[in-house]
Each structure stands twice: as structure tokens, then as C-alpha cells.
Amino acid sequence: MTLTGTGHPQERRFVLSAWRQPGISAALALCLLMISLAACQPAVQEPDLVGVWTDRGRVTYLKFDTDGTWVVADTFELLSARPLGFGTYHLEGKLLTFETDEKSGSCRGATAAYEVEQSEQEELTFTLADDPCSGRVRDLVRGPWERFSP
Image: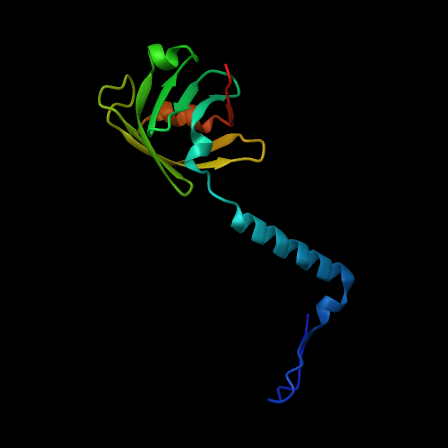
């Protein structure tokens, strides 16, 4: 790719010779489009999280409520009857923070942070940022998580 021009103040004619070649110009345009789309992908919004999610193997169920609370259990029925863990959550951009209640059955009092993303298929993936609770790490990163409807 060469940049040409006279540099004269009255005549600033610059031509990227690569843009004259259709294959290269199409490839560059495609790359720019992909970069701009990736950069513009919106973060998961809190209303997108609300509801019940399960990992593909249906081993763990995770429920996010509108009041900022979460519960986790081995079965859908146990979410309300006997959850394994519970607490509050906060979503800022793609960063999801879990505050585990002191009375929770697991990970008592622990604070955890994950980057959360939602795919076009509306599946959630959690990427570990910080979590002292190895059981939660194992469960969350095993995803993807899909919305569950009983």
C-alpha cells in the first residue's frame, strides 16, 4: 500500500493504491465492519438476566430476581425450597458481582465477580474475574447457560 501526494497546501490529493484493488478493499471493509460490530455489542442488561437459567447438563439451576437477589440449587424445585446458595447481585456493564449471604449454604459471605455475555441464541457464558469459591467457579464456567422454562 503506498500513499501518494504532492504535499502542496492547495492540492492535498492522497490516494491509497490498495483501495484500487477490489480484493483488498473488500477485505479491509469487511475487517472494519467486524471490528465495529464487535465493539458495539451491547453489554447484558439486568432485565436480560432475570429468570431461571440452567447449564446444558441440567445439573445446576440459577435464578436472578428483579429485586437484585439470586439463588442456586440442584433442581428447579429446590430453588425456592432448599437452595444451595443465595445472595444479591449487581450488574455493571459486563461485570456481574455476586454477594453471597452469610446464611447461605455454600460460599458464605464470599464476593465473586464474573464477566457475563449473552449470545445471539440467548445463552449466558460466565468468565471468571475473581471468586474464592471453587464450587461456584466450577458450576458457572461450565456453561453455556440457557433460559429454563418449567
